[in-house]
Length: 53
Image 1 (cartoon, one colour):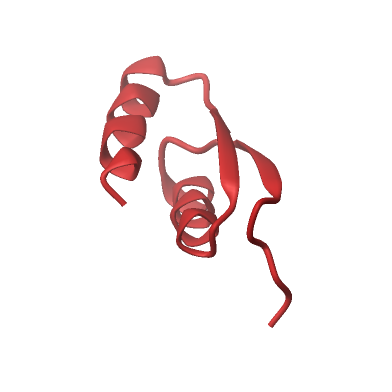
Image 2 (cartoon, one colour):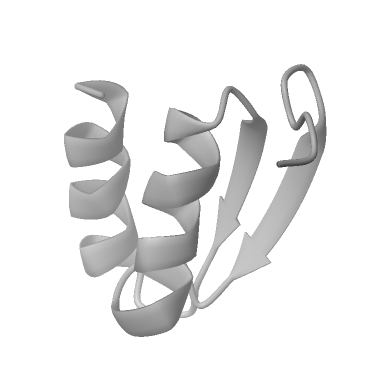
């Protein structure tokens, strides 16, 4: 598998669904992520949960 450690990804739609799943996967692979979504409350919740990973 390709090495993703220390890479950066900007993920749109990151508060839920596929975007959220990608954010979690990328974090587990060692990437730094930037989250974006128009649903600010859901995005804030996703940020809190992803910080625990």
